[in-house]
Structures are given as structure tokens and as C-alpha cells.
Length: 207
Image (cartoon, rainbow, N blue to C red; front, side, top):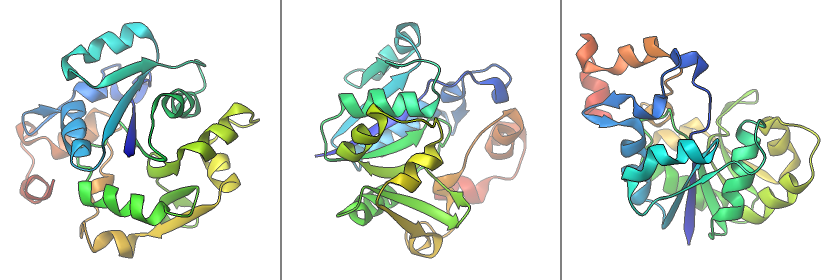
């Protein structure tokens, strides 16, 4: 079984207080696009929210389980812990909710790359990684997260037996690397939103 964790619990400060997962692109919300994509690559999806009230925002997802953070205020580390406890697959893809163009082929590539390792992390270079677009071994996550000093995802990656997947390998599936498109604020959204009047034909065709 292959599982996925979608982290939605951020406070949306960089998005002007708006909930990024309900931003709309090509007529669908980010969360709906992400769930539809992951269904092509995994057998199980768990959405991790900051609290039970936020979970209610995702009732429309039907049979997709939403759980709250068990240890609140820890950022992505807290969400990873709750999600790892909830999923059942040996390996799990972890995604942030603000990446509307994730490519299912890249997700499958990362699962294959993770075999025999604790994690498969896309790497632009030694200092620029994609830890929230990556695959982890569930048991390794739980072992680390049960007792740790740092809230840094990067520190966690360094402690694991990690395979770093270079962009040249990912470009074979996603030549323009659109899978890593990240929307941190309203200006980023306007850059890909057709309604904003920008020329986004290349992006629309690819993702």
C-alpha cells in the first residue's frame, strides 16, 4: 500500500489570511486538484489539519480522512507525526496544500526511489530541498518523531537514510518541473490564475 499525507494546518499568514487550499485554479480548488492527483498514485490519503474545527472544512472530500494535529504548534513536524500515526502504507508521500500542479508520475518516481531508504527527497542542490513534496518510510518517521529536539524538517531529513533525487531525473517526467509550483501568497496565485489576466497557457497545458 502507498499512502499520502496532505498538510493543511498552516495559519495562512503569507496568503493574506486566506486559506490557500481553497484558492481556485482551472476551476478547481487546490485541495480538490491535489486529492484528484494523489488518487492516481496512492491507495490512501490522510489530510492533517490544525484542529477538529479545521477538519470540518474538508467534509466535502467524502471518504478522505481528515485528522487534527495531536501535538499542536509544532508546524509541519506536528502534522507529519499525526499523519504517520494514521496511515497504513510502509511508504508515504507528504505534500503541502499549496502545490496545485503536483505530477502523479513524479509521485510514483519518488516512491520507487525510496525503496531501501528512509526517504526520497527532491533536491535542487545541497541546500535547496523539497521536504514537503517527498516520500518517507513510515516507521522511520515515527521513530524520529517520537523523540526529537528540533522542529526543523531539514534536521529530520539529515538524521534519516535519505536518497536525494536530482532535478535531472525528475525532468524526465516533468520537463518544466511544474510539480514544484508553490503558492505562498496572493501574488503567486495571480501569476498562474487565468482570471488575473496573465498568460498562463504553458502552465495550464502542463498541469
